[in-house]
Image (cartoon, one colour):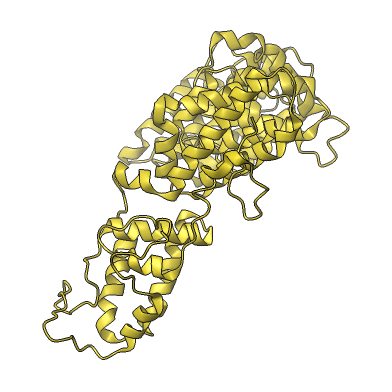
Length: 503
């Protein structure tokens, strides 16, 4: 059973089975569809029937001609009033549902994403205001106002959109592909192009459609389709298809964060880790699998204990080794930064001062981690967060947590060279000097200063101790309510290290 080719700009030859799947793709949108759907009960354009419609459809040309005609109603006709007392040439009142359906039709016709479709309509409306007679301006302004307002739609409207229907169909066809693969005992390479087409369309819809539509479709049937895609990934051995599955799952995580927890508690992390450790010279496989693993771990949710065999200490050791010495095939030098993001995300699941932090255990077994420590120091100096693109709630906590954990134990703190510790002290002094009372980052740097003083060899060089003393004195003397937490931290650090701050 050959799966059905999805809709593409350059469609591949269809099989007899593709008639239902391509029914959605065969519709085209013209200007008359758009104008006729400005009414209150607008829906997506339906397929043209061969018989004569019961009600004549006005063409875009006749609509345009009417805009230029004199505003003189026929005898017995009355034009409806607009909210401001002006009269409108439209027979139906405009509403959010009408405008939302218009946006969906523009997106379908132009292949723009949801937000750009709204921008396109706004640009057209602004241009029309200069072309149409004054009596039509209120109607255009009404559409603009609705377009910039809340376009939250009920489920009945979302389910009728082209994107929702097409997304459901593509997911169903991918489920069928998985079932076909399950039933046969040999690899049918003839279906690779068709499956790839489906996955490309799935990714396109997830990236460009209204996110609310995507979230609704993905969450239907208790996320059954997503679970099926995970099973399909586990069964599929062809890398081109696996690569597209990984990208599709990445986009799903970005559009609908609850998907991340489903992936974390599935076999997927183990499959990704196994694939990475089995293909150490394939840069494409390493980077794609790493990107999905980073997103899965970026929430800080703890993985199941059953994952430790494949995504445990051995896997972290593998990541750290390749950060220090990437494979020869990595000509662009992307693996160290890619694997560093995985380590930072992986480390989020362990609570502070945990006695069973697998990242710290792997670091403690190393004689050096020069590249690793230099890279996280550079990130801290730039005030950047490598996980910001993967998690909207990260807020820089991954890099601070990595430093806290690194300086929680003498053995891991010893991996940081003395010169790097001095550079870190320079950063802390600069931030304590520049940041204002109440800034959460100042508290983070005070906590980091405490950990450096506690578990490093700072007593040997006392780098910039006088500057630290000045910063502590200034913070302690601040007379604002927002300084209380920082003042408590300064007091605690001074009491813990009286040799530096007292006497």
